[in-house]
Length: 263
Image 1 (cartoon, rainbow, N blue to C red):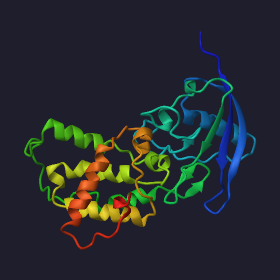
Image 2: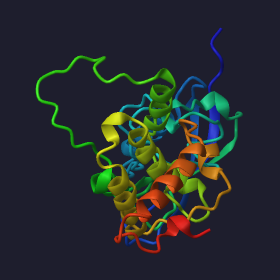
Image 3: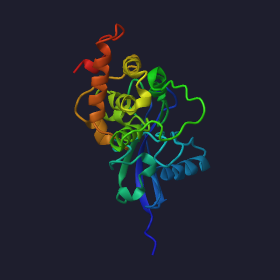
Image 4: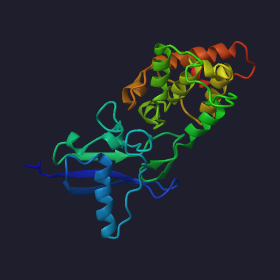
């Protein structure tokens, strides 16, 4: 026998644009299947709003498979909701008891301005990547996959860092709105691979400089970022970023008084 549908009271942040003050609006919703994802539940709400002539709730999404990082929103005060290791699109309504009140709002960070409702502009992350998160290698023709041997330990560590999907949960979880975990993951995944050695020092220097230019805060060292990261990226990558940055500063005249070294 199928499980009965549920009812919820949604408190959703509505904001017309970046200049609008915005505020919460209450929406009761019923006939919600426990097997629905959180985004499917919002789809259901939006379908009903559209039928009554009210503007649907704007939210960001793409793959709905926990890969793209677009489904960024606070749910009851937690980035991506109450569970660890999942994105919003992987969160199901069975995680909430029947008749629960659910508060939904966008990321709150100076560097992530609200576009509309639950959608924020995370282009700051793109600019950080553009500043140095690349490898300039003349690949020429296709090369043998085993031509550059990499140990499994190093490959696994690089892969764990590369698992970052750039959702911004680390920024949302940090009381200083720091992007350290994101930058650390992107620097770390290349710094430990042989292909990433050419720009190693410049990469750390430029990406940290861009992080500060975007208005992200300083690292708090509380570990909230890793606790809320849907890919469970650890603090060891932040430690590596500190080493990479400080190592670059010893041979560079371009490194200023960045937030990275302010504790």
